Length: 127
Image (cartoon, rainbow, N blue to C red; front, side, top):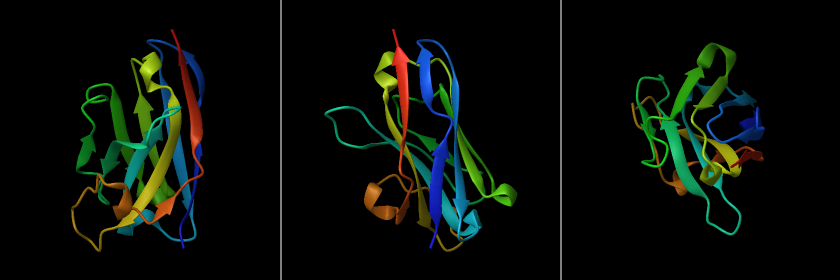
């Protein structure tokens, strides 16, 4: 069983940056692709970014492409989401998630593909 804990959220002004971290325990992450999702108030949870188990294949939602960067350090069992040029519409609860990929260089983008989720962390971007 994988336990995931997000950190690094908070309040930032538009144009600013934050880096989210997701620390895993219970199992090593090198068997899992990792994803980031977010849920804004009154909206469904949406895909933001994902990265393959090796870290070599990141994939982003169009809304964050060029501003967000997903990365991972398997040796530290941690994944990151660097968020730059933040906009008020990025305000949401952000979740990290793990998907078993059995060694495949595959990047899931659908929520049902992820079997393990963190509790979420708030990111608020003020105008």
